[in-house]
Structure formats: structure tokens, C-alpha cells
Image (cartoon, rainbow, N blue to C red; front, side, top):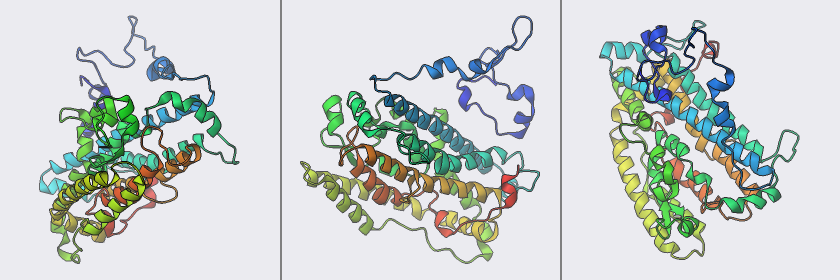
Length: 421
């Protein structure tokens, strides 16, 4: 298979993965991308060559002589590598859902209702998606929070990153900010958070001072003025291989809608919850408190309220179209909880919670604690800071959960064999 982007040139069809010739990646001229034989027909690839270690290990350029800056660079690069893996895993699940939707009704129902695997493992159809979904939850719940310890404290309460040393180099990096991570924004879009990225809530003072194209006042977190060259990564075009990641929530709901006929013998589910006006007002009041004495705070809140009302209206219109998906979700919960599909959906929902929930061990909570430890007061590193993190996590992100027609109906089943294979 010629590969314009080898990372995204993956196969889900079992026949393609079974055939050694079909699954080996080549360039446009048919040459092997990795480990081609030399003139004598010998295979010569080594570990450093396969991982491109020369490039990987030379991709760290500190701005100062402060030793702790090195771990600051490494930890953020580790985050981006994990985000890259999560985006790929979301892509595997999204493509699996699309493959499922393309099947005729009989084959669709057979695949969608496949029981959780026994010790022999899942079918070839579901195997990539099951491992991808499990990795997503593991990345969000375990890997990302654990990595945050590098800029916190270790198991014996050892200080692993010095706040005093941090302030010796951080000023050299303005206006760079973790708010500019385009890959995390793409993950959040996959998990139903796109409306949050369009709200004019992000403090833009630091960006306005350093970027001439940054508008005055507040900007949206997904604005090019914030994401800079990463904007296309967070908002991939239709011809980008990562574009399917942005459609995973819609595809999951479409799969659920096709299961609606199975709900004939289940109790009628409650309607999908809509975003009420009082929650919009609560978020607006929270933002007003966040802004304090900032110039033009009232105008900023007025624009934010208008943004959020429009986003909520659009989202509520989307949710009112989920009646069939809701019925399918009810059938899955009541009668088919011990299926591979339920396994995958449960782990997508758990990934969302592990990243965003206002619980003590979620990634955003752990991140907030680390930021508060090293950043004095409410100041931000690149124009955002603690007030925005709190407002976003507690008052905005919960309004737009992933798989909204599925997640509040109760936990689906699991199986002890799911971890054996």
C-alpha cells in the first residue's frame, strides 16, 4: 500500500492484516518504507534507525542554563507523544464505527452485538478498536496524570521540580503556553468539546502584546491567534487523515441509532438531557467573578454569554435529533451490555471523564494542582492561567460530554476475559 502518510496508513480489514505483502508499507514507488534489504539482500535495520533516535533525541533546545528546564521540555514532549497516540487510537475507533455503519443491516447487527471475547480474544474486526479504546482510557486515566509528577512530587514526597528554578527560565518562553497544544484540542473535539473552543473566554493580553494579529480583549481557545501554526492540527480539513477523529462522536451516535429497533422490549428511556438556561447563566457569572477588575469585563462576559447561548442552542438542536440513538443506547445498556461495542463506548466515555472531570485524579485536576504549585497567584504562563482552568473544567466542559445519548444511562457490562488476550 503506497503511503502518503505512513502513520495513518493502517488497515482494519482482517484480510489486509493477515496478508504480509498487503500489510507491509511502501513508498509511492513500491519501495519498503522500513528495513529494505541491502544490495546483498540482508536486513540491516537497528533500534536507533527504526525509532529515528538521532532526530528524537536532538529535538530539545533549552532557552537557559537552568537544569530544571530540561525536564520541563521533556515532560511537555512526552505529553505531545501521548496525545499523538490518543489521536491515532481515536482514529482507529472512528474508522471502525464508519466500517460498521457501511455494513448491511444483517452484518451490522452481527458485528455490533458481538459478545465480549472469551480467552480466545475478540474477532479480527473488533481487535484493533478494543485495544485502541483500552489504550485511550489508560492514557487519560493513568499515563498523563503520572507524568505530571515530574513537575511535582515523587512517591517519597521528594521535590522533583523546583518552583524557584522554574522562575529562572520561564520568563524566556513568553508567550508560549500549554494552552496552545493543538493535539489536546483535537482530542477534546473528538470527545464533544468543540463548542467550548469557540467561546470568547481566553485572556489574550499576553498574546496581544507579542502577536500583532491577536485581537484586543478575549479570544476563543481555538482561535488561530492562540493555536498559531497548530491550528490546522486541531482543525484538520476534510482531506486530512485525522479528520475522521473529529467525527467519532457523531459516528458513535449513528451506530446507536441503528440499534434502536432492538429497544422494542425495553422501557422507554428518558430524553437526552439538554443544556438549560440556568447553566449558561451560572457559567457567565463564574466568568465575571474570574475577570474581577479587568478592563471591559462586563463587555467580555456579555460576548461570552452570547457565544455560549448560541453554542448551547446548536448543541441542543443536535441532541433533539438523538431520539433513535437514545433508544439504541437503552437497548445496549439493558440487553446487550456484555458486547464489544459497549466495551468500546464505555472506554470512550471513561477517557472523557479521566481527562476532564472535576474529580481529584483527572488529568485536568492534576494539571491544575501542578500549575498552582509553580505559578504564584492567578497569573498565567501565556495569558491564561488558573482562573481559566477552573472555570473551564467546572463550568464549561461538563456542558458538552462525549456520547451524550449514551453515558448517563448507567454503566454497561464488562467481563474478566476482556483483559486476558
